Length: 58
Image (cartoon, rainbow, N blue to C red):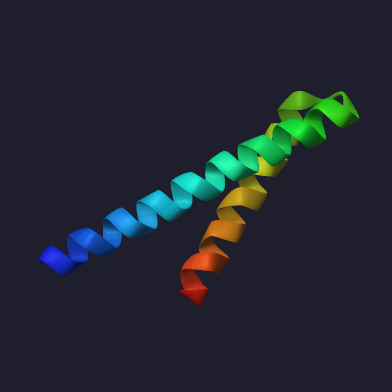
């Protein structure tokens, strides 16, 4: 049970980091394309995808 809890914490933190990164990237994309909502949505999607890839690779 203890290791399962630790694994969940690691996964949650990776997803959190990737979402924050995605949010930053998305905001930058949104500002440059003058459509912040679409940029942020795209950024979060990219961030989650990258987080999942990192999780698979680690």
